[in-house]
Length: 241
Image (cartoon, rainbow, N blue to C red; front, top):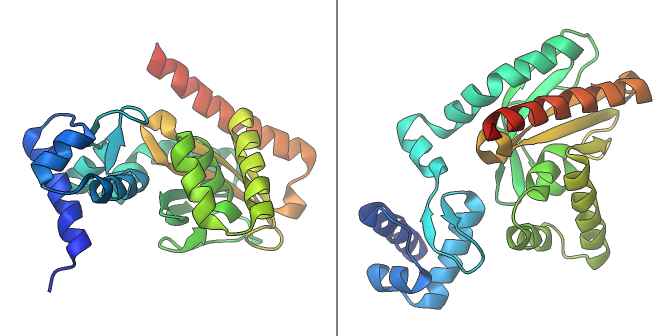
């Protein structure tokens, strides 16, 4: 037996694919034959998952590149192919573990890992998930999302007002700094630095470098942050140029 909400969600995606153009909420409601409140909830979920894009808060809707990559290349493979050279460069320069993660709801799923050659290490297996707000990967992704989407994810992540306030402050600092830093919040003895891959056209993905805290003194921390932000900034300049 089919699940009604899935039927409705796929009908919305099919309408956007069939028309091949951006549609307003009103146009989509007519084409998909759905009430506007129901349609709005479905579109919000599809946007949070990265399958639908919106021009602005009140703008038109369109299918995202993420949906295309599922069909053409397989999602994980497409993102891994884009991120691979950057991950390899960081792993070679610092010989620490480099992770690729993607936001899925309020979780970050680990897609690919390049392991350090050093004996003391922390390795997470591809497919594992963590709550976004406890990880550098998740925080840097959410920090660079549109405000409305960001606030919705923060509200879903925790019901405590004080925790939400601290998380919003951390996301603000992360966006200004250009990277997220997390120390022993996910795993004792491990620190992580992460950058968003929005500059690669992958706003729901990020890469992080995981380092045992005893190998993370201030000079090495600054060197790692500098290397990661230079990679991102350099690529952004090339894209804009």
